[in-house]
Image 1 (cartoon, rainbow, N blue to C red):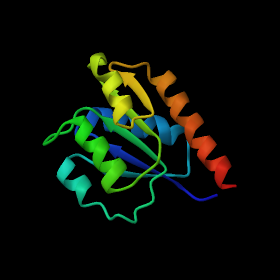
Image 2: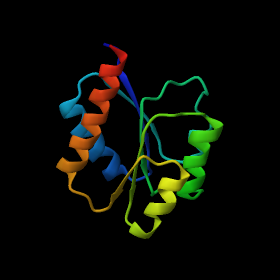
Image 3: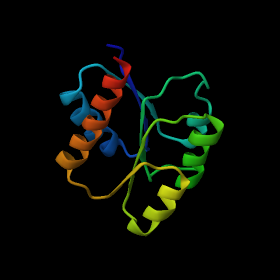
Image 4: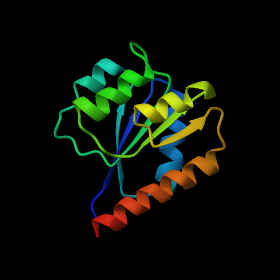
Length: 128
């Protein structure tokens, strides 16, 4: 089975570490591609294969909708996007911009990770 490539976009070191540890504890064959700024994300090679995206609202130099639009239209990535934000009032806007799943911070780690793992397993099954 080929590795799953997870694009993790956040400048929040604690958030990154929590997500990374929880997923790696449950999924062994996963590669993380992490960016802490929008400028670095824009430099990601277009041919990079991404299977799932985890996007934190905490990103400097831009707004969340610009990151989502960039990923969807410029990079043309169709992978499911998990979006995390402390502001629940932007949920509808996030969905209209191309997010697949929205979680309000603070979140229950077990619920979120179970959902992400289910998506990853579904992606793996479709490959086989």
